[in-house]
Image 1 (cartoon, rainbow, N blue to C red):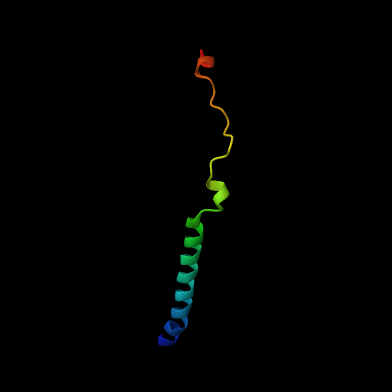
Image 2 (image 1 turned 90 degrees about the vertical axis):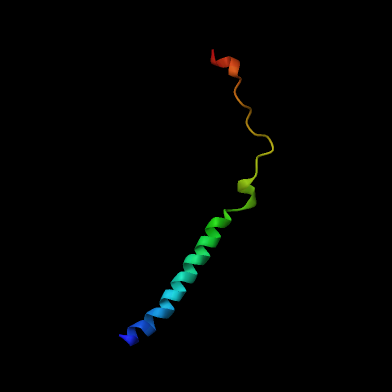
Length: 51
């Protein structure tokens, strides 16, 4: 049983590292361009047109 634990421990550590790296990259959230407001956003519809 000790032999199995000796093999699994490094594998667990590597898996945890991979999960941490993926989480950090995922939370980084794409490029900055995706998060910026466009220069000319679409105009809002005129509320008087509804009635």
